[in-house]
Length: 194
Image (cartoon, rainbow, N blue to C red; front, side, top):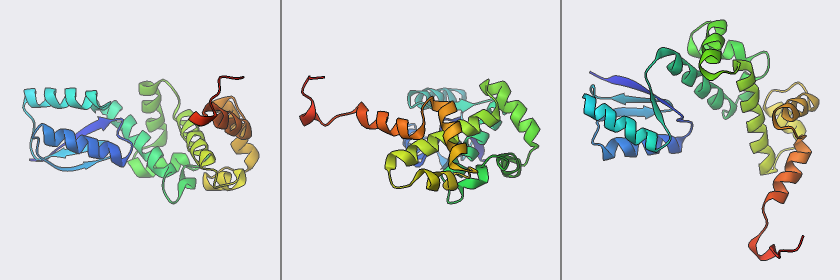
């Protein structure tokens, strides 16, 4: 009988590949591995589960046992997937509540309460932090203007994006780019002079 295990910190296809490799190394039969979950062909014995827990922890993952932690991880994955989708504005201010409620088939207030109890931060602040992190990523690529990034991520305006960016990072987007560019140097430019 198939059994589903929920896994914390799986956020990309590389994570899926790492978990598949771990399962193969432990000779654990599975039917699929998705973001945040493993579907095993059968229940693991106690020692098998311990070995899997240890292997996953060595890779930076964690098996989730309690329902609230599982729900919180599903929320995080939904937010991250939405921000990296072709339609990231679905997680925009004023829209994220209905998106998450629909995606997770639960009342948003309940999801928010569970999330806050597990993470110690409000769900709204988490969504904002993830949106700003995505904005930082797109900024660093240098292929989009700030206005395009604001549109891409569903901000009302560049000022709205800049305000949240500053609140989360302590820097304006333009200052962030200047600091980012000055963090590293090419090895042939390192002279020891100030």
